[in-house]
Length: 231
Image 1: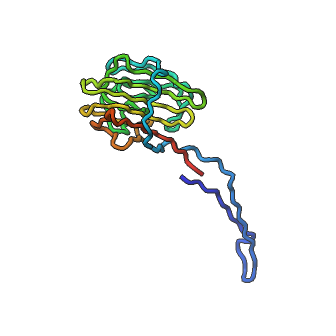
Image 2: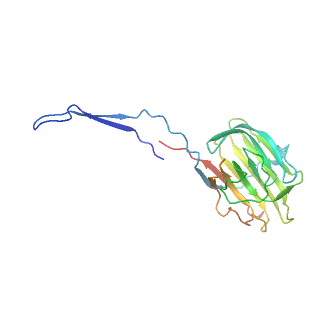
């Protein structure tokens, strides 16, 4: 969205006779407040595989089937779709949420108005954890990161597992998803982000609802960059 200055014009005489004169003047007003950021626009780019150091990620996540961790501190204010959050909730089913701790194991296409919303899905699907989901806030301000680590978390079907990280970045409010393995090509899953009302979502190419997989030999990373409106 482009914003322009306002221009006003006036004349010293609105009606003039033949041979008369009128002085025209114009005023350009550049004194306008910067527009607020557009909370509905993210740009997705492919980034190099880069799992954060697992030895730094030590807080215990939820365990078992269809479980969720109660609200935990992000470690810094994080703005997501225009709303700033300080806590998050973590599901065993491959996603984190800001507004609830929904444990649905049936993924949907994004966006979808049904719960969960205000969500980041690394690979939302039917997973079951065995003490192998961890999280931590790492680094120092203003470059801290919240890292949620799914370490070889099995799909309930018994076919394949997920190794991935969901990363929130303090300095940019970017979201990064790193997937080093998702070797399940049977169960439905989805990757992406969704706003709090389930009306806007962003999905990397070929990572919408489906039976896609990420072989360990070809890990991938995706960055979701918030783009504010410009003058």
